[in-house]
Length: 116
Image 1 (cartoon, helix red, strand yellow):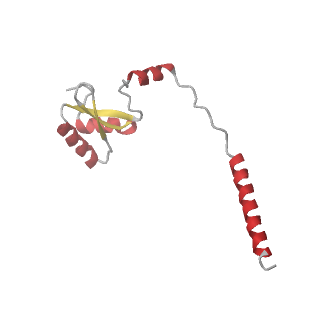
Image 2: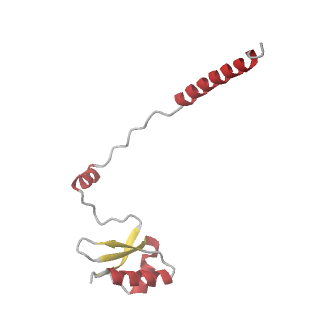
Image 3: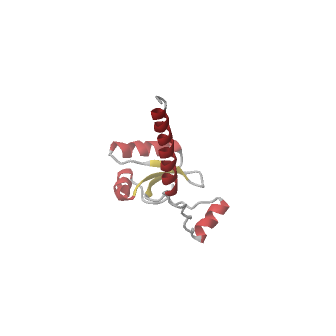
């Protein structure tokens, strides 16, 4: 008789675990299908080529070498402007900044928008 109490407790724990597992599994939302993508975007992905679109970033300068780009980046950093570098298809290096900082950055580095 001394083993009846612990056995009942173990059976109850097992039943509760099964019920909890089933209730959590049933409450999972059904998988959502991916929204259809635009045809033009799919074509770009299929060919492996991407346009020179950097989202929120805009070019503040274009240099011939990475060393020059790093100097421009350091100049911008010292003025409190965050920047990053991107290689172009023709081997030049773009210094990219956020769109709200691009005018200030271009004035600081003296870039007119023409490639070197």
